[in-house]
Length: 357
Image 1 (cartoon, helix red, strand yellow):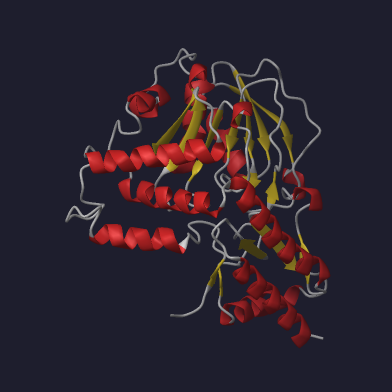
Image 2 (cartoon, one colour):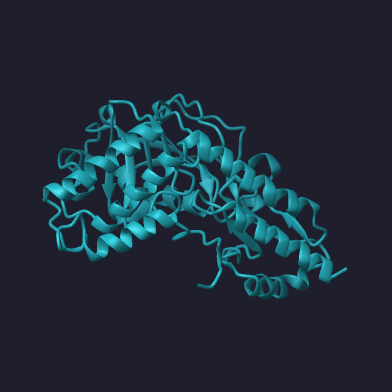
């Protein structure tokens, strides 16, 4: 089998154990004689998967008892409108740290007044703003904890005078999180916790039911809580792989263990970027993401970009081309990305530098 080093930003590399379990379940789920994509989502066998997945989320993140975990469709992009629809009565505050934060902000404007407390747009989102004031009369304050396109990350759980809402699509389960500091956490699964097709929502139950507008059933969190994420047919295969991915993470030692591994991987690549004369990092060092490592050719070597991409591809690197809006390179080193792949990219960069001295 061809050796590849998968740095795709999402969908992305998953644990081999989870992928293999998915292959087996597609053939025969739980000795049922049926594929996992053929069984009834109302069956006891499937109910057991849902319960296990929910329990793993609660255990790994130490989610308090007054929170619910939902598995929905629509991706994080659906949450951009679902959050304000359920929570915004008069005013919401948003921190603008990238394209996805800006899209969330745009959707919220359809439901009430929206205040941008700070933005790093003028600097091409290469840092996370820190000097800002959160309006105390806001219904909630929304942040995007990791910005995949620009390679910045909020590394701590913020203190907020109002309800804190976070899009954690690309760094959930990569480090311990104090869930009690948030009213709602959401994200698409296709970075650290599974394949595309399922969206997670962690929500404190007492924040719901406080807006005056009518909520369509499919967009009302309370309906999904009552239906235990099965008000409509859930994305069964995506949830199955998510469950296996979380089991892999638990067996690895949980969030403290994976945080240590993620720091080691990121330090390895950032050290090479800073050392190598042909490359430079783009994000402010204090805000560098541990998940998405962005870099470009150093000044005077910009003409080598296409050549390096081809060179890296020939060495088995996949998915390192930067987002089309910023160019350059991006290595997404999510939980399941092995350290060996990061070392292979570092070796590739060193060889390329040697070839151009």
